[in-house]
Image (cartoon, rainbow, N blue to C red; front, side):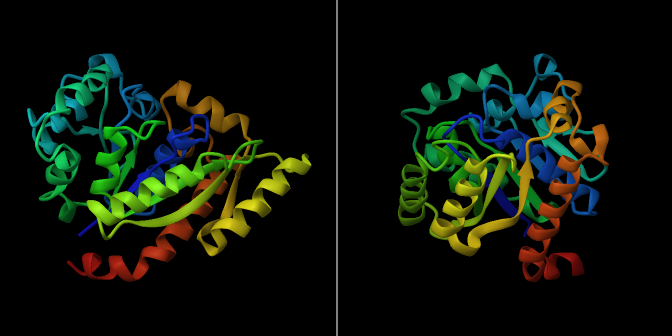
Length: 263
């Protein structure tokens, strides 16, 4: 079955959505069958991949409320092999409506149960909070990528996130692992960036990706044009770094994909 990876950090401004979009895009460019799931009510992943969130009729809200099947909400994107399960503002009501529902943490996992065999990767962008939506993403996932910005207080809150991942692993998803820690928004002109990189590598050891994503104006501009960096400016430094990151991800998951690629 395809691998499900949730991009998760309850702290905002870490490059989480940018990473979700561009990881999904470069995996698709590498020839993998990929679905990108927007689980954030802000729907920045949806608009950042080129889908008008105001025109979305069926979204991940309807999926979690079991009012639509997974295939019914999918949208094609401008990149071959990449489809989107979009979000919109409706998703803000999902947590309230699910609060008393039996097995509410498993809604996304159940929705993906029969779909995983159709894809090599399912990438989930979760909201910047430790909410029921995030828990659904963690429950459905095989692993988590944690983006960490190279800024002051960068590692603050990671202990809480780590504890949440452990609780999910102990109670509802025993197979959940940390796929990797991604350092973002690096500015090598500052001493702080180097200190954060070193601190992250000391704490997370070899789970930190070798690739570090720099601050890059082209990466910042791309979402406003509804394009992943591959389509907006694939020669930019930001694009080259996400391409390198996806090579790392594919190298890590190579043994797991061998059987799927034979089918």
